[in-house]
Length: 178
Image 1: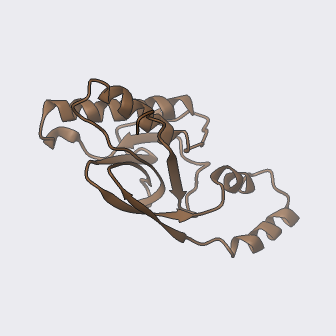
Image 2 (image 1 turned 45 degrees about the vertical axis):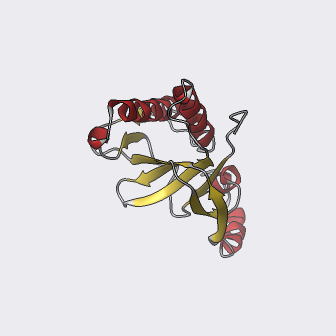
Image 3 (image 1 turned 90 degrees about the vertical axis):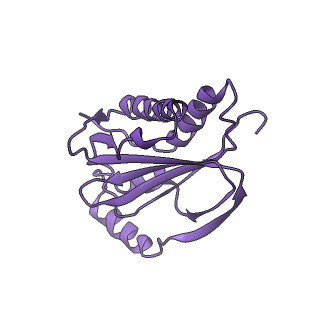
């Protein structure tokens, strides 16, 4: 992408209890990476995710966090499957605790139509995917992704990774109070 305008998409799990999550941590450790350069790339992604989640009220926690964050940078062409779903903000609003019973019953009826309509994305030259996992249940509750052909030899790679990661995390619009 010449202008580095990363277009992000996301999917979410209807069973996610998004209002309850307060802490996050990262899955595993990038210690088995092939080079020190790769470690720097992953630190950039983790720092960007941490900054974004911190600004939304989440606290980093190493031991038993509510959310586990995992991510993957695909460097080769990849086909990816996503899902067509209701707007995340609208869906969350409908689950607000400030809903009266009549409205709740109406929305439950509407939810029967909620399903996971698959969308196949064309083969991309690369992809950044960020997974948000409910640590207690072990389910992926949200995933965001952007097509990106990262040039890891470019002097701008740190900026590109930061920009793409922020673009994806901008789609995760959960605020929490700690």
